[in-house]
Length: 119
Image 1 (cartoon, rainbow, N blue to C red):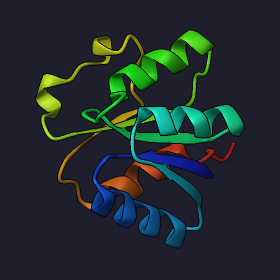
Image 2: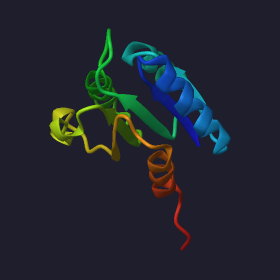
Image 3: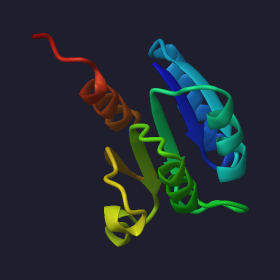
Image 4: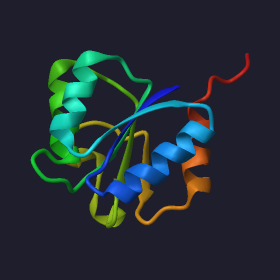
């Protein structure tokens, strides 16, 4: 899968990118929603993993912008306060919600849910 990881915390991006690449995925990264939109306007992704709270353009505003463009990319939202977040906050249904700090086994579980199921 080609995955875009968006988070303003360099260590979170580093750990996620390294983990996802070790799992065999192609990964790009962005430090905020504006950088993410630049990536998303250049190429197609199979999955977007984004933090909610970021400078310049938040994860919520990023997802809203994608919806306006008609981009229905599968979405994983990361947030330190997941109990305060709902899909209605962004107007789309999140594929998954990861509570920060998260365990990499939880990321692996989400990725497995995305894999095509045998017929």
